[in-house]
Image 1 (spheres, rainbow, N blue to C red):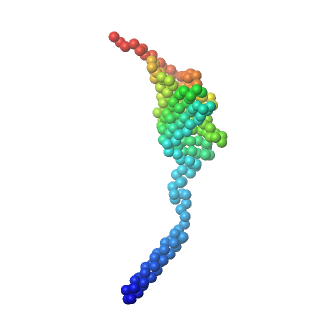
Image 2 (cartoon, helix red, strand yellow; image 1 turned 90 degrees about the vertical axis):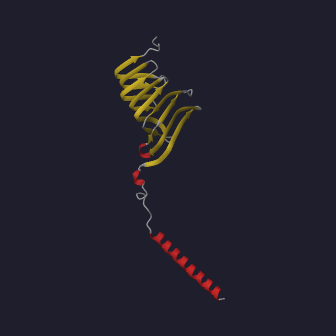
Image 3 (cartoon, rainbow, N blue to C red; image 1 turned 90 degrees about the horizontal axis):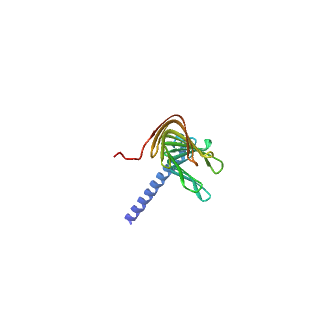
Length: 197
């Protein structure tokens, strides 16, 4: 009987101790002020509406791909209707679905408009490479105007083809007919396919 009273007393003491700990925890939580967004680190990206890793977007028209964009990282700024991307790759297709041009760079800025967030332009910076069939074009800054289907590069451009090397200042590329206009200071080197004997 003495042992059962001792056990009952011990249970009562443990129950009071647990109730006291629970009350103190509840009071501590209730007295705490909620953390603000600044404290949570959101101040670093104040205008970003979305942040996406492994960004991938495709436009399909008449059952065929019109364009495709991939990037390692993307941040959408709703106020500017712009998406900033890291390591972007832009593929542009013909109406029949054939790859027409491919662009890549270190960073990019995509401008989208309308309710459907339709792509209107892309600006690529840093080690920009443009592939058109068998030609590779390199520059530091290039823009793609989707409605005009036009790629422009205002600075120095190097073009390497199967049988030519070209250096120029400024370039415009009409993507669909794949017509290239070099704007200034053009230097061309033609190469022969014949092997010396």
